[in-house]
View 1 (spheres, rainbow, N blue to C red):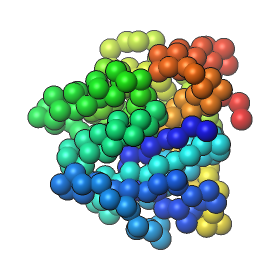
View 2 (cartoon, rainbow, N blue to C red; view 1 turned 180 degrees about the vertical axis):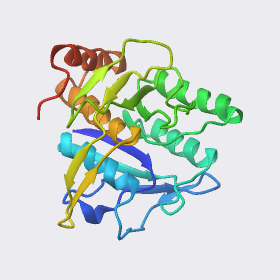
View 3 (cartoon, rainbow, N blue to C red; view 1 turned 60 degrees about the horizontal axis):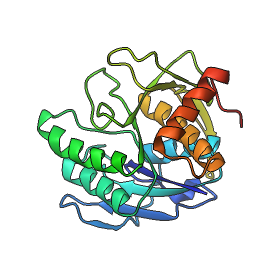
View 4 (cartoon, rainbow, N blue to C red; view 1 turned 135 degrees about the horizontal axis):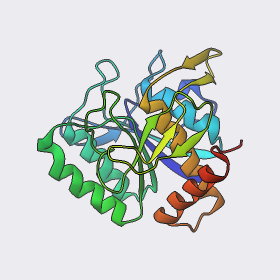
Length: 232
């Protein structure tokens, strides 16, 4: 079973029948500890996890909280600590709906991402909703994602490779029925599209467990070319 780290503002287990295998948080000093919070409202990370589970139910999720669930802000130290933890524990697939646009953060981000990509780890990251550069999505080796409002459900397509295009486009409109009995309709945002691509990568990894990073991406592009979407 594929394990996916969701690096966001935390996943609330109360919204799912299947709990996260681990819930941790990175504090302002970069220290990793257990995350025992339970939000009474679905956090952004919870909704992204819901999309991943909706299209790839047979997976294990690790929640890594780096953003404050109220302000939706965090620090470079927290993000790097989360990525370093994933590198250390050999988490093959990471989902990120966040990033930094500060040029001061370029070199430390590049160093961490290069190390993870070199080890065959797959990072799926949402590009900036406003079109500005966002790291890690805009760093080499990261699978970058933007929404395409013409797509729906778990449909994805790969780009033509033009400048500032993402690696993949995906649907950002989804309807989720969570464990609290409520139905959530999500619309717009590269974050929700990135979750779809993460689910697609996980499906390929489950089907081809020996496939390395480059092979997984090639298979995703092949499937896009053949049918534009992954069938549940």
